[in-house]
Each structure stands twice: as C-alpha cells, then as structure tokens.
Image (cartoon, rainbow, N blue to C red; front, top):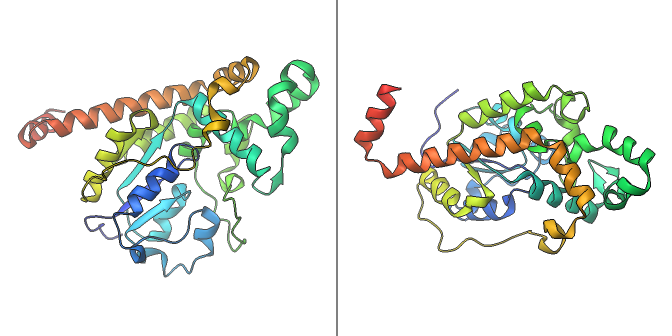
Length: 280
C-alpha cells in the first residue's frame, strides 16, 4: 500500500455525531472533483472499484470498509458524542424515516417512550431484540466492528447499513468487552479524535490535518433539534439509555482524553513534542 500524499482525509462518520456539519466543512476545503460522491457503505460498494482510490476527500458512513477499497492508509478523523444525546438523536432519526436498513420500524421508534411503563412484555422483547441496533452502545459497536462487503446491492437512500457490520454488531449477546477494546485501538490509530461537545477545537485539529485555513464559522446542519433535546424524552427512556450505554460512556470519555492530549501537544513547541515522544 502506498503512502498518502499530504492533504488527504477520511472522516469516519458515526451517525448522529454532528457528521453532516463536519462533512460540509471538510468537503468545502477540496475541489468537488476530489471528494468521493458516495455517502454510505452501499453507495461506496456500488462504485467502480477502480474509481475509489482517485479521491483525496472521503466523508461518509464508510466505517472500516474504505481503506481496503482505497488501497492505502488514510489520515482518519472521527467525532464521538455524549451517549444520551447521540442515542436520542438516532432514535428521532429513526422516527423520521421509519426504517432501519430497510426494516420498517414505526412501532419500535414511536412506541419507545411509553411502552416501558404500559407494556412490560413488549418492553422485554424490544430490549432484547431491538435495543442493540440503536440504543445499546452504538458508538462502541460501530468503532469496534468491521464491515462485511455488501456486494452489488442497490444503495439505500437513507444509508442505514448496520446489517453489513460484523454479525456481533446487532446481537444482544455481542462481546462488548472485545468491541470496546477494538474501538479504543481504532481511535488510537486516528489522526484526530474529537467530541461534539468540543466541536470548535475538533474542527481546528481536523483542519490542521487537511492543511487548509480554518473556516470562519461552524454551521449547524441536520440537527433535528426539536426532536433531540433530552428534555423532550421521558425519564423511562433516559434511564434505559443510561443503563444500556456504559461502554459508550467510557468510550466518549476516552475520546475526550485523546482530544485533550492532542490539543496539549499542539501548543507545545516541536522540540518539546519530539522530546516527549522520545521519552515515552
């Protein structure tokens, strides 16, 4: 695999982590012809394989599938979000589109906020079969899983490609200890790991990687704010999310630590950084 020339980037876009905003900012730093036109795993897989390596800017829900198709390692950046906020946003997203990977799920998405108290049998079924897809350590599962190539399937408009992650991704019995360790290892290998809560600092570091001037402002795109605010969810749902996401809580904290370390390194002189790395 050949080395990446300066200025390339892969934004490892985890759903509902300010990704539309970041994708827009990142792509604005490149000529349109240098930005891959695909946005989802299915759209990526539908492309001519010979065309995939010809871009410099890769933003989308490609997860671990991109680099094997690009044929080279790419400077990769990602962003994590507080698990309660990310999960609520993902639930509301499913409510708006009524589907998960082609599976219509209005009962699941719209019933969550009252089924917990009123329908205990339905609650038990939902918790066992459905929460791993959306509500149970979603960010850990995405970062700790590998993509199974979906072949020549037609691109899905909404781009929800979870069935093409490894089998353990959506299983209630997934080995989350293993996925968590793999997720941390994947974060360790990235050029920038940021958080939604520190988005301006995250954007600044990403543009250091790109080697382009920092944008004057950060837009708020695809926020769905009227759906997502934690105050809009009842306490049954919020309590369940908190109980189900201990790995995501730990991974979000780990991401924040990586971000702080990167920010500290940037304010040091190159000589200090070199000395620190030499002593490690």
